[in-house]
Length: 309
Image 1 (cartoon, rainbow, N blue to C red):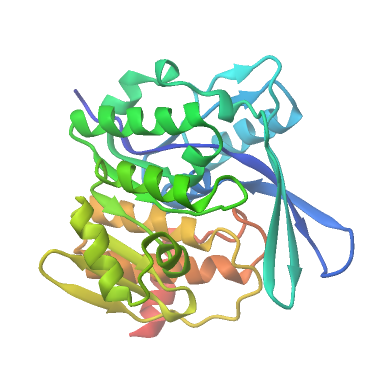
Image 2 (tube, rainbow, N blue to C red):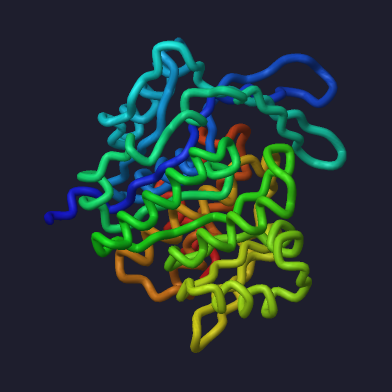
């Protein structure tokens, strides 16, 4: 089948309310949802990106559909639920960093089922990107993600999985079992260090990479925050130095990394080069507020990488 999409994201998208100043109840409205953010990042780098979820027939759902249209992300197959709402979340800022508060229980996305999946889209994409958050929102959503991974892989697509851990959504034992089972269906795993330490019980980045490679994925991109990233496959490891910026909001930085990294791999980059590109994109995404607005374009990333040489 002709591959009409480079990347397809699947999960839950939400409308974001991001605190303007710490301690003050004034919030800037925006958009979020990890896999949606990643597809917007990929589209801004030049990928033919698509997204599938379920939204409510409400103002917030309309807003997300308009966002994807504006960003060039194909969301034409997203169903709208007549009763279940679109999820929202709040981001607060303080001395300890940013804190998330979600209002997503019973959301339209949490009701998605394996039989709702768009089989033709899964067959038409070069890569599928999913995450643990998409599985955590409900048991049937967890099944839907695994079914999508199986279908996409069967159609020859790369499958990328972010282990994004939200313990407000599920307990660590359930999260660990579900995530590690899903990773056996993934080609690329995209964890962050802190959540990987919680999920594996390991502390050293190299040991964590060994663990994840042992589950079946052929490539690990371990995100180290301000320390950059570690890229590992069965033969080599590359430590990616951070791109230093003045960060103001890290919301969605890992998602910008994900979308950029997978797209650069699809474009022919070696993992080390893709990691350098993705780390730069992630750093630039922290220089503004919100998950989506500060995601850089390809031109901005390439300019920043040129400055590092």
